[in-house]
Image (cartoon, rainbow, N blue to C red):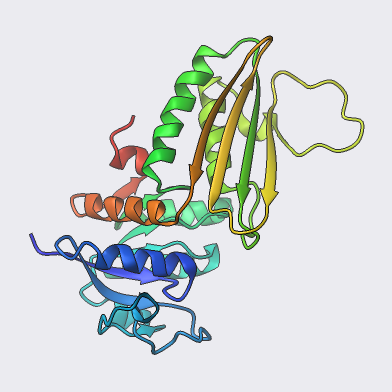
Length: 269
């Protein structure tokens, strides 16, 4: 089977470079077809592999139409407004998408759902295989520890992350809330300050840390009487997200229409 033609968005950024490196490391399965970045990026016109020590012959561009010609899949880990622009063009051109962007509002999520009627989309808050296994473990833990345990979610990321809590932390909260038959919007508590009173046992708490170059740490704490159960995932490299995204891209080759997540890709339902 010929390699999939992959388009990487945000090619000049940290995650973009990691995705490009992952594609170049798997030439039997993937081919770097195009690399996109915003028009004002200083990387415009440079070889997409220049900072990785590779001469790919693919120049970073902002010409979306040219980039999508003959493409199989576009991978985007950028910002919601940019992703939604690419979404419309991909849907029109029949190019599948892997979306790792977080921070979408309800309208943005509806747009992704609508586009999935025309193309295949894997949309997930985290593409790490380990994180998605953690989601499954959280579902089991929440059902077993449904009585007498307080639930807190703590996440930490690098200083440049602009949304909080992280999409992964929110997804963990959703998994736990669904297992407990709760509405996360109604029971979530985002930070505490001052005299808060005793903890409401029906709530799910979130705490956020931002600093340094932390790639991504997430812990869900089930605190009972006399014991605590902590389920933790720590990412030390963005490579784990890139490898998961490529796994999703390959899986989408057999799914030309529909909205999916990494639980679908990994058959963890």
